[in-house]
Length: 466
Ligand SMILES: Cc1cc2nc3c(=O)[nH]c(=O)nc-3n(C[C@H](O)[C@H](O)[C@H](O)COP(=O)(O)OP(=O)(O)OC[C@H]3O[C@@H](n4cnc5c(N)ncnc54)[C@H](O)[C@@H]3O)c2cc1C
Image 1 (cartoon, rainbow, N blue to C red):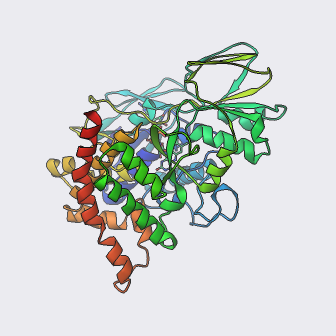
Image 2: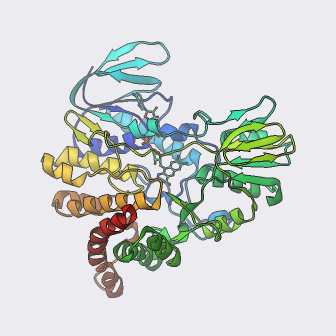
Image 3: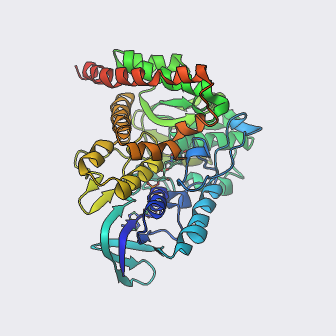
């Protein structure tokens, strides 16, 4: 079989790339995935997972994920809804079945693996199909494969026989019959598990939470990309740029972020050292604060029926608790040996804009389809890596800003971005006219603030290294 592109990975980024290639070219594509259905890791996510951010700019370019609606109650009340796992999977399934495959330009190989050199091996039958790649191989699963998700990751601690330790995927089945729970892991999955338990009526006193680290969290109320939230969102984004541009140290930057309300933390008494860009509403934070039995003594190393062994402490526990393992690490920091995004006959789908893997994949596809100049492609696609700490975040934010500056220099790309639904800012600007002078005045502050930020971040990081 001969095709123009072979895309390895039918997860969100592979589909986002495919979507733009279909609309901007007449290319043919084979797309392969080890999983049985499109959507990548979402297929194996825990049932109560949701997007962290508004659905308005998640998915692929050509189709909204859902109609923006305000949540009336619950932990996200008053904010735009966050798609559920089933909504996300339905969306990707429907796109593949009813939009992409009917074009006749796509060949989809589920339950199959690219083993190299264009060879696709069925995981069911072992049959190998040879693909001749006319243009490029697109690696859309590299980053996903390097990370880990709760249902498939390898635990880094021992669990003695008789102890019940489950991934959050099994929580709805296994929670009944237990009256005490230990959530292991301080990240977004741990927060989701604690909130699920509280929401199902478990008393906070019956939850223990192992939190080796504390995290800074984005305040969801501050980053709603919708015209109704124009002032709050623009003020917040500009407060962040101002912090990048004026802070002398990483600590000062974090202080400014907290003061502006853009970041918050669960425990006001503990200074977080980590930042993975998880997003929480105020209501979620208030709920999480109700759990006061928090163990901060390093990672769990072993669970015994009557004892929890951590790196820095051992705790006696009553038998019969249900342990929920939320220690998988979704993201991975790529090392210096990571290949470039445009790499000869291969394209590696990495991020070029912070927290936006899908917009990044779409932008890379647009460059592939419409911008032939290798130097321009390179200038527009500095790698924006995952980050673990606020300092790493600063460095990656700067890379993102450098890309953004380069995009504005390519008129065709800029025109595409201005219409792209995956570019969050566009949603804030819907309905804006030349008569909105106050709003336009506010928007004009972005350029000088960004310039100051790009100049100052290296100084902050230099101070950190000194
Ligand atoms: C709980 C959670 C919530 C999130 N919320 C948000 C959010 O609100 N907003 C946001 O923008 N992002 C969010 N993300 C980030 C999310 O990871 C991405 O949005 C996206 O789903 C990642 O897609 P992917 O295609 O990069 O990776 P994956 O989903 O891992 O897909 C890659 C696929 O490639 C396949 N593959 C790899 N190598 C091969 C091979 N050689 N042959 C065949 N198949 C192969 C794998 O089987 C896999 O299915 C969230 C992530 C998690 C875990």
